[in-house]
Image: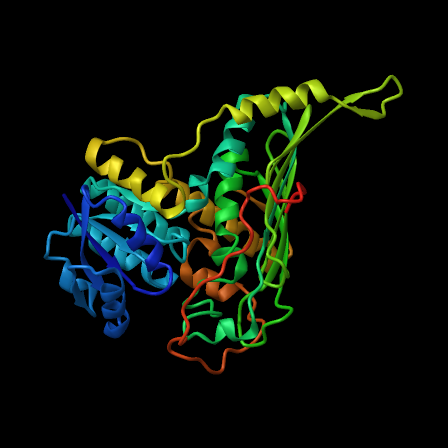
Length: 391
């Protein structure tokens, strides 16, 4: 029976708590930590947990906790994760992995040195539409991928950035590209691989209480000549999100849709319905995941600890996601096309270098400590809409 501690009991911690509670025969939540103990106590009572409540995570380092979920603001991720790994705990850290590539490297090294599991939350990989799309892409049935598109469309009101740690380069580490599109960046890298070059733009068009961007657009070039595009936003009404991959033989997307074309003698297209049916049959025969979302990732982490099974998302994956995001920030800040990977002497490798280099769109002049309502609403997932159209 593994003991679990959750550090940070804001809104996202509920997804972790509910995930762990699905595996009561394998783990037990032994501790909750939050700077505001009333928040941790409320979570303890809400879920009926037999867990101690502390305000300083360092009180837990000597307790022999087996697995820690780090659910704190991004600028805390690296120091807390490294301390927990050094204390002998495995760590599941929320996205984004850290505030800089240097911190990512320190976390990966701490996990290696201590022989511990380090996983970075990317729960969308553990959703049936995304997992099945990945499997269909890997089958090669669509042919070489020529163009990839990821739309990370969210909407947040002006007050969203009133929370004390949001909207600053120092504490949040960035805007929508880092904190909202991170899941789309992770999945895009997983499905398509790392681009060789990035050219990007970013702006703050609707939130004058934040230093950071609320909209960015990145153009990607891949080593095989293919192109891609990624839009990150918290100004899109409807929060419709999608992935589209245009292959030589067919188009695949989430929300799921398959369209295939073949050439007429004059070069114009006609539908290749036979290939569409073949791909659809392949997709329909793929099994569903036993668990989805955070629960699926927690199951994966528990398996890795219990049996040594491979992680689907490890520290290297988390670092790769942050590297592409930092490439976007570098290009959008300098106006240059950025070549990946970024070197350790690049300004965008360190926290200090990033803060010196990025624009501050507005000054954050006031804040609130907590919102009375901490509930989270999410945009559309990748399931097909009732109308049959894509999101």
